[in-house]
Image 1 (spheres, helix red, strand yellow):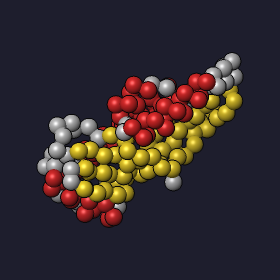
Image 2 (cartoon, helix red, strand yellow):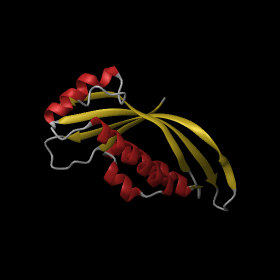
Image 3 (tube, one colour):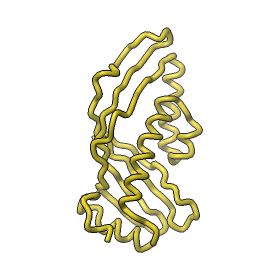
Image 4 (cartoon, helix red, strand yellow):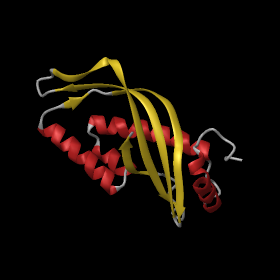
Length: 159
């Protein structure tokens, strides 16, 4: 069973069980693999200012806050040259099911190399050689009744 697994905290167990009961195709390990991919894609899209990709991967609130950041960065003429070095750990820390919405929170412990350049291409912050440890909890949601198998990012928190 998917519940005898080191993939999640005990606080998430009953929520995961409810989600699995509502969605017979749900698999915690596959979800976590997908969440890791989404984490990378969303960060890359945010860093590159690719709003169309973010629109597809995030709910409206998260999209709007990312888009505002991108717009103000663009207005300042700044660019990010960030790189996700590695995800040290991804773990489900919470899950809930409120018919028909499934929500799962994942804690990502990752190393990110971050570099900010100004309009003239001068480095104004960060370094590509010193990766920074980050700890984020991202919550994804999906309507299990919908034909769409994709989860969307609903909330981001740093820990």
